[in-house]
Length: 304
Ligand SMILES: Nc1nc2c(ncn2[C@@H]2O[C@H](COP(=O)(O)OP(=O)(O)OP(=O)(O)O)[C@@H](O)[C@H]2O)c(=O)[nH]1
Image (cartoon, rainbow, N blue to C red; front, side, top):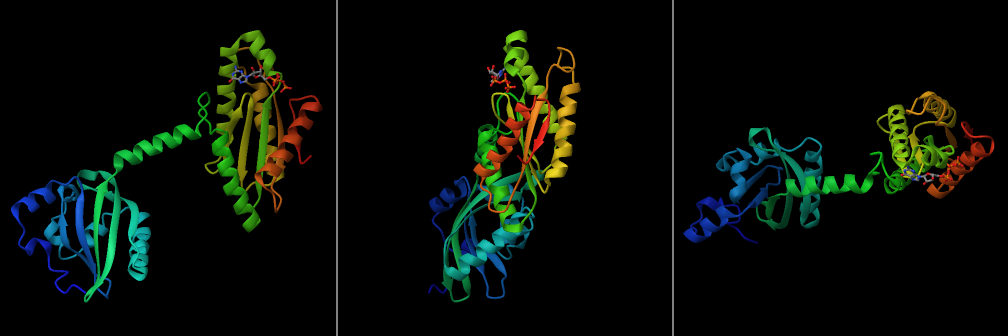
């Protein structure tokens, strides 16, 4: 077990070329020490990233608190739990978190650190790298891969993912959940009469009507063609039916530039039942939708 492990790195003699090398690193390399009473400090801290924090590194060599206070408040408990697990099981920490930097900037930091037990507690050796650019790019790509190009609504992939999450919650906690399937009526003749561009405009406007109806936790998606789905967590069938009626009416009364009443929609609704999978829920909403079509369109059908 090393005995001189927590001697501040700055106090150890270091060849000049090593100091030059570590100070130029595009990130931070560190030792983090945790005493049995939970107090932490950085015995060693180097790299160009240390300047971005705007905290004197000599302070951090005495006490890690100033940097912990810069953590995003939702990331703080997560990082503390990761440190705790790493200490207890002697497993490496691999995580990322947001840190408030100097000049009001916020950065995403990736952290990798290896723990070892020492006489005075736990000592981690690790690196931190600013990954803000990658995170922004990842978020952009995720948004793209979840979004329908034409309408900006969620796409089928995103709907399927949310359906799995919401169905799992409803199965576990018996929470109400409703699904609306919405399809434009005789859309082929709109395209044939007014052209494909007008058809696209209608789809965009219908999407906007769907979006306007929703609460923060609801999801509207375009499944493809002229078919949409609205997923409403914590919503029972009867309430969903009222919303669907209002949406149907709004669309029927809207003038899409070809006179009001020219665009109508049929809507089918299904409410989650314990044990449902996304396939069974979609199937029942689809059955209701096709019943609405069979009965003459421009109407809402529930629980077929
Ligand atoms: N403008 C436009 N049209 C689309 C798009 N995707 C699918 N369509 C058209 O939507 C029409 C769907 O026609 P059908 O499936 O026959 O259904 P419908 O005419 O709406 O008839 P019902 O659903 O039975 O009321 C087809 O003409 C497709 O070409 C799109 O992105 N833009």
